[in-house]
Every structure is written in structure tokens, then in C-alpha cells.
Image (cartoon, rainbow, N blue to C red; front, side, top):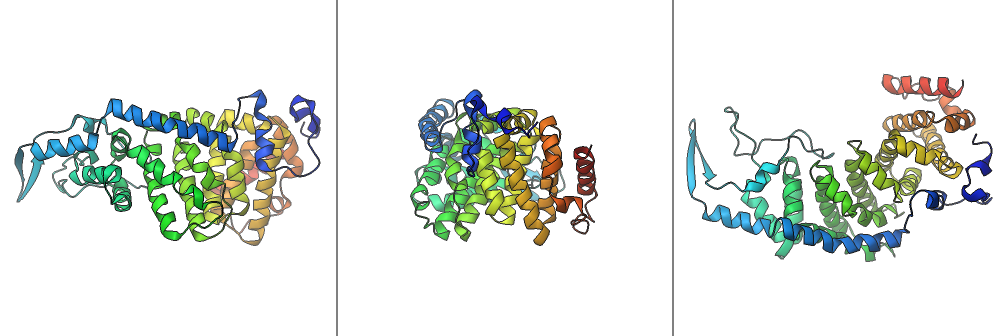
Length: 398
């Protein structure tokens, strides 16, 4: 029972009376699970793997973009007639192009689009990024050229056109290092907080490419093993409500959201060893509605995993931190309704109720505004959310 707080304090130490920060509420309790580094230590560890990423790419695909460019420039051209059109095709097809899978899981991209070279009526296969000379030239520019900012922008535009862009980015020598350099270059502008809009836009273009890599099933595991998400945590820890910082937080959340989108236990286990939950709670408390929505989506995905639910409910402090922020969000939405955000909050409450100790505590912690029909009008067009709310109230009142 969560009514006895000492039962959930590790080592039999009573929780201090003053309000703890979300980070201490979570991280001070991790000694009995896995050793958790402080944020600065995590970043140092992440920085150490940058060389490993570079070395891995060098061994697997040395100067992939340069090789592709050379292959395509030297390849003989064959002309295929498709009706009244002529399509120029390269005689050599790089072997890496076969690595593309079906649909990318990129949360920012919609259905796969046909490139201009694909047949409109003949059902020609979708072109691959590995076969696009422009992609190769922009990758070379990003890695070695003076127009890196333009390369970031142009490559970001191609995310919606090619399913295999993540594979090309990950396997091209120097690309991930270049993206991490873009991220690290922003750190000095976080404290004091003087990030400009152009600088924010540039690093967000780099983050968009990282999101592409994070969402692809064939690069996601390597992305995690390189601990690249840790480079984003300083952005999530900012508190300024200026537009450049909001955009930076939202785009960084998008990368984490792309990781958790597919309910991978490996992703959840990785995130539980980091500070992602307290960082998301901080954003859920005081950031913009859109950032709050992505942050609570991440928390919900963690809770939906059995290990994530057990982690949050293992100690009183963790449960208390999560439930307090959920209650605060409900209180805020009672004044300024946000249907999409409300749906996620209800789902989080319902998932917490699956744990016996949390269910007992929720009898007194579910906000009154969820019990007294305050949100009936907001949920009028959302039968799923209404059903979840009814199930929540029935469960905690038993």
C-alpha cells in the first residue's frame, strides 16, 4: 500500500519533507536496479562513443557516398522506354540499396511517396535514396563541404520520399559524426539561454535526420547502442519558453518519440536507465501543449511496457512524481481544455491502475474533475477516451 511511504523508500530511509525535484525522485532510487549516471556523466559517456560510431562506419561502409558518386558517374547509361517517355537508368546498382525495407517508422513522414522517376501507370518500383545522385552529393557536402546547413535542409526534405534514407545516413562515413557536431555546437547557447532562431532551425534539421535513423527498424538498435539519445537530453532540460527553445525541445522529443513508437522492449530498457521520465515530467508540467503531448506520449509508451510500469510503481517517490504531474495537467485542462492531451492523461491513469499498489493509491489521487463530469463536453466526440475514463473510475472505486 502506498499509504505507508516508508515501505517504498529504498534502504529504509524516510523521504524528506520538502518537495524533491523529479530527477532526484527517480534517480535517487535507482541504486537497487542499475547504476545511473548523472546527466553530465551520461553526456561524457555518449561523447566517448562518437569515435566508436565513426570507427564502425569506417569499417562497414568507407566513404559510401563518394563510392556511390563514382559508381554512378562511371556507369554506362541504359535507356528504357516507358510509353512515350524515356527514363535514364544507371548500369550499376550499389549493393547497399538492397537494404531498404518496406515502410519507415518515421513519425514525421506519411505514406511513402513515389519519386519523379517512378512510372505513374506502369507500377515502376520506388526509387531508393542510395540510387539518387543528389542524395549522395548532399551527404558528401554534409560531411566535407562548406554548405552543411543547406545539406541538412535538403536531406531533411527527402525523408518523406525514401524509405532507405536512414540506412544511407547511418552507413555513410562521417555523417553521424557531423550530425552530433551540429548538436554539440549548440550546448554553449543553452546556459545562458541565448539561442537564436537560425541556430535553432539548423540544429533541428540535424535532429530531423536523427529521427529518421531512430525510426528505421534496421538502424534503431545501433542508434541505441551508440547512446545517441543522450546528446539530446540537455535540450529537453531547458526551461525557456522562447520559440527557439520550444522548437528545440519539440524536435528532440520527436526523436525519442520515434524510438518508443514501435513498443520495442529494448528501447524501453534503455530509456529506463536514463533520465527521460523526469525530463518528460518537467516538460509536461510547463511547456507548450504540443510539447506536452509528445512528452506524455513517451511516458505513456513507457508505462504500457510491463517493465516500465513496474519501474514507475516500484517506489512511492516515482509514483508520486508521475501522479502529481498528471493531476496538475488535469487541473490545467479544466480551465483550458485540450482533448488530445486529455486522452493521453486518462490512458496513463488507466495503465497505472493495472498495478495493485498504484490502484489503491489512485482511489484518493484521481482528480475530482475526472469524477464530476467536468470533461463530458470535451470527450463528447471521443468514445475511446470516454470508455477509458469510465473504466478508470470503475477500477479505482472497487
